[in-house]
Length: 446
Image (tube, one colour):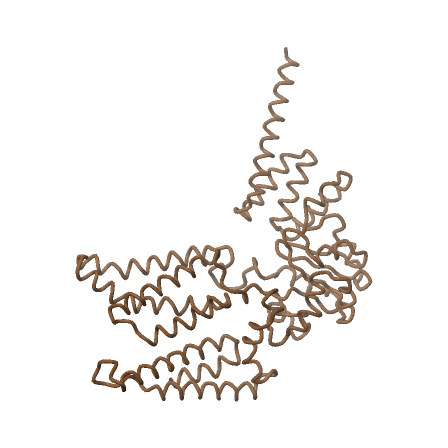
């Protein structure tokens, strides 16, 4: 309990998830209180009294007092930061704009729903046999209810519920193994469970699309190339960045540069997101006025499948120039703030990485698009630029070059269905061209 109290006091200064530890400790304290009352009333068997509820409540109160004290000393926001999870969950703005504050959807997160049902079933069966633990049950109920209300809570639930499931399922499995299973087969249950958990972890995280196992920076989610371009070319002014990249931006550039926003909602509050950040990102009428007020001269944006808000407006605006893009990010600078020959060396006038196909529909601009795509592929080696270059080559009738570009795309991004389909088309065109030449040679010979 002493260690838990110290942990919670430190945790409060690191992340709002501190509330999860307080919820768990409070639930254990509440359950122990109930058990103590029932034991005194003679409703619970046992010669020895249960663990002291006073110690648990004292640890809970000490953790709260130490957390408030350390926050008052070290945190610029002060103890008010402890209320952030509650204010965000109650905010209509965040509940409509941030999906993780919505209730757990019935048609998604199937593993979480399965975990809820399995744990509930194990507790009910154990209760029927009078083997259910009240403290574990209360903790599970608290976190299950919170996950149903706010789906972000499925993360702590996914940490807590498996342990509770195991503690209630083990006696049932022991009984089953003793009655029906050979002893050797029963001993294999634990290794089999560990192997199954390892396979889930490998397929879901190590080999998953969102996370990659290993050390260092994951370039699939962090715009390392864009950061390098900003630093190497000393891009002007303040930088407007996507909120998900704000922490990485600070890690790379602070204190020389500040970020525009990050996902610390206790620092950038509802008013900032509502009145400053989102009006720019959504491309509302006053987006450029807001940027001018903050001295922004560089835009660091995410590449999406279709341009949204500021992405579409910046490419069409005469005041902004696209100077860099790769697989996940792109950079615009204000023309009147660009230094030296920056625009002459790096500007993309024809190709919009957010909508490459739209950039290629105009046949007159195709040579310019090919030149820009070749430059992008040569400078960043991104699979998006190579895939777009293959399409442009195909539109120009250069099917051998197109097939080579699509093969390079698949080498970088094997999961690209469009590149695989385009490669089949290019190879078919090459085969048709070869067959046509063979027919003409045959006719000429005859």
